[in-house]
Picture 1 (cartoon, rainbow, N blue to C red):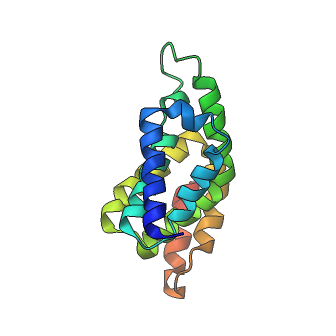
Picture 2 (cartoon, rainbow, N blue to C red):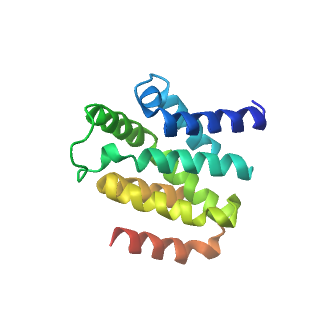
Length: 159
């Protein structure tokens, strides 16, 4: 798949999610769209990385997941269930790709988006995050000199 086609696809998904979330969140293609966004984080292409991060941040931060929303629309429980199922399935790969990108290839301007996604995941699924994080950290390729930093990061996050 050409990077231009992938970039266009991701922008289409983002527009669809922002303008008509019901079409995306109720579609059987929703898990595949998120899987593609997560996998796209492995590419060294700034526009694709930013589009993927925007999609992921939007999905994880959707109002359907906010229990403090008063009088939620009737479709919010179904949206929340669809989002939780996809995040539960794609969470380990998402964390791995985010950490790998931070360490290796992501543009510097993406750091705040990645931190925001980490925070949202911690709020949305704290137990899952804690179970996924060690494996992700241990699977990010780094030189041996980073071992103490990895161990400190794991300790800080799990504490």
